[in-house]
Image 1 (cartoon, rainbow, N blue to C red):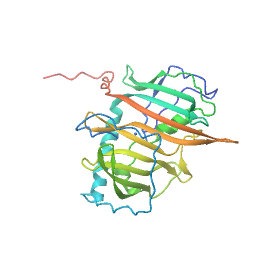
Image 2 (cartoon, rainbow, N blue to C red; image 1 turned 30 degrees about the vertical axis):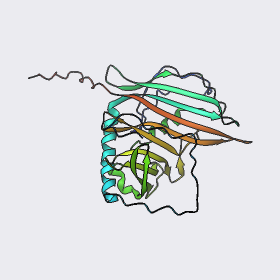
Image 3 (tube, helix red, strand yellow; image 1 turned 90 degrees about the vertical axis):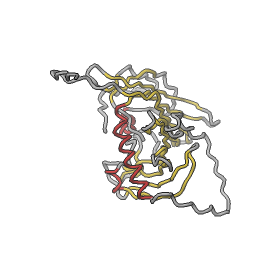
Image 4 (cartoon, rainbow, N blue to C red; image 1 turned 60 degrees about the horizontal axis):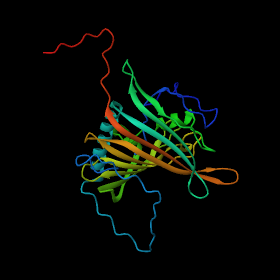
Length: 295
């Protein structure tokens, strides 16, 4: 679902400019794991700052096959993805977007933060209201309106049943995500198009409930990796939180990259967090509609 961005404030005059308090419509469909909600709603641990993998000359043991045929697992988690995608617009949240630049010492040298809160207008329209926007200390990056539009255009659930025919999905093994035993599937688009970015990456599927709890990858077109126009980020690691014991919604996504300058490279990071998920109130009746009679 694309978002009307006509109300997104113009930041083209400088990264230090604050965003005015505006109501920005839209839901960020994104492309972010936790103990399964049937047991707990505690979110999964975010990815560590440094992930060290030791390489040895020993061949890894063969992966045991999944308990169910991979095709059956794919069909099940794809249907659940559609259930989550349909439920997601009915929940509000608090969202924090943070851009960070790092210095030569590896410590943050500049930061931009934007915090929004979902609100419902008097006519039932859903908005994201800017509630925090401290002055930016970034030296090189700016979050421009086209960047926001690009981020909002990423689908959070690309592998729904209607899209499966456009992907090659391959079972590649098993791995624990926090305390959840997961099947791992690699997704690659069969075709690439100019106007429609497709997901290319990996999904972790809860082996017990057959629901996606984590994704890592990027979106691609026939021009290559798709990323926000003025930002270098393309690969995103996305964790999910279980809401109300039945929906897995993105709650943390992170991307690390480098901004290539003329004389040096600047490490940069984008983090988006969603918290305080709550069902939105029902839309008010349309004008002229007669209230239903209660028995």
